Length: 310
Length: 310
Image (tube, rainbow over all chains, first blue to last red; front, side, top):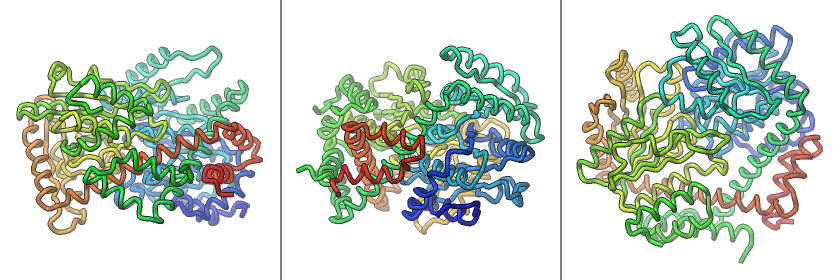
């Protein structure tokens, strides 16, 4: 199946990806050659930074310029129900009737450890559907979320004034993944200080000559201030990637990660199938409970069984 | 090797676990039968909630009661350098010379997706070393971090007043993993409202009759207020787990997760070894670049090669 701009088919395929259905893989195989055209933008930052509103505004600017925009929003999940909490519905109502905008929320359920995989897969579907821009929005705190934005050509890290000390540490952690830094809610007290601190930290990072020099921008997403400038900076970064050839190295790394995610996921499913044949899991867990089996030796045995080493 | 209370040997083993060294596995196999005695407490919450200070105070209360305390702190990591940002040194200086306290920071590098595995492994070492209490501290936002605290017998979710709207969503997400809820920095404006909101949300969660009823406590960790009450509530929860027999179900689930983490990790390493023999990865990534190979078919081929299906 090739999408040919069929939005319903795309929505169904994304649902199949999210639900980890095997048939999604066959469709993805066929889509794959048609992908590679979308420009992917990552928007990440701590909870409370106003990322959703910012994504909404950036989407509006790209729409005004005639670009089709896909949005993949990674929502905090209820670990028990497995559902996304914010959901597509309360997001970006004003684009709801715009056929040039396609929004999809993914839940951070990650039972198969496959969130970065399914995000990449959903971005591919949007790409194949003809979206010019795909925005990936994550809460940038956990390693999982950091891995997800690595799929983006340009990563924007969003901060706000006055989020406390732990944030400083996280700032240091995400300094190295950001291509552009945004201090949102810039009308708040302390915005200038936060921007200055970020700029100072960026000065101290060692970067090879000729490499991209990340700027700190201020926005007030709520009233749309600073958004044109942000989009301008994103396009500057894109030009830099292309003109320096850095984009080739980036694409190789991204493809490697995507492939390894898929491989890891497949191996895990295979292991579950293998163990299901003789109730291995039940035996191991019981043995661990009374400390007659250790999980390290048990895993080695399952592995040997799967690979046929005897 | 069995530890026999040898702190240096334990520290070295934890380093080996953190560095993913193979020899760590042999030692863990031997330690395993000596574990299962420590009570594990998870402390999680958003950045800026004051978790480190709270952990420090809870540690002090358990020490006063003569308990040995291990702390595993999951720190936000610099994704490039791979190092933990906060580090052991700036944590809990006042316990630095206390032999009854063992603190270890783990970095959220997760390159092998093994953070919940290495956290569980480090907790086991502390257990074998004779720690009565092991506290696991994480930034509770990503799924990764939620998975980590599932290893805890009792999970405390820490909130603070006034962290904004996104937090509400996260609150809903972690409502279901918390056994105890703590509103820290309770001297701040809005503390009572935050506590009331949490209590209201908890009322709406459907729980079977006879199940644990999570309370909302207020603390000011900075000046030590409310900490005795928190420790009291943790011990009440422990009694509940034991008296209702819920603990057996919990331990089975925990053991299953730990075993599956180990198995997944081993499979991944095996796949890397397998592909290293004929530069598979290089070939696949190049093919993805020019869209002549799709990663889904490539992963299926590698899997077939490893398992000897032809």
